[in-house]
Length: 164
Image (cartoon, rainbow, N blue to C red):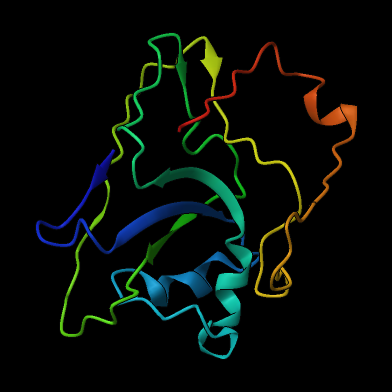
């Protein structure tokens, strides 16, 4: 559930909660409770955080709080690879307003009572990175992604939520 700092509703654009699967998990300890880094320049991004690339949950402006149905939940701590989560906060500040601080984020509720169905975040298309640029003045631009049917072998059902 998004929690936006009062007064920053106009600047907060979206959040991406990523899972981290670092082969040496202790190296991520140094980033816990840190102020974070500006990740718009790849030179600022610590290499250890490149192990935090798999989207776990996404929220964008205009989207309501997400509440899973009672029969489903996102697995938390189910795989041994995910030991940390990384929250990316994205802002839209076209007026270049200065001297704003923010403590917005996501509130995640959890329970020890397992749900019969596991929810996942599904993304289609290419991995988004700074190398994915849309050329200027293009009337359309197509990005294609492929997923082997093995990806869905154990999935009983899935629902796509489109937010307008």
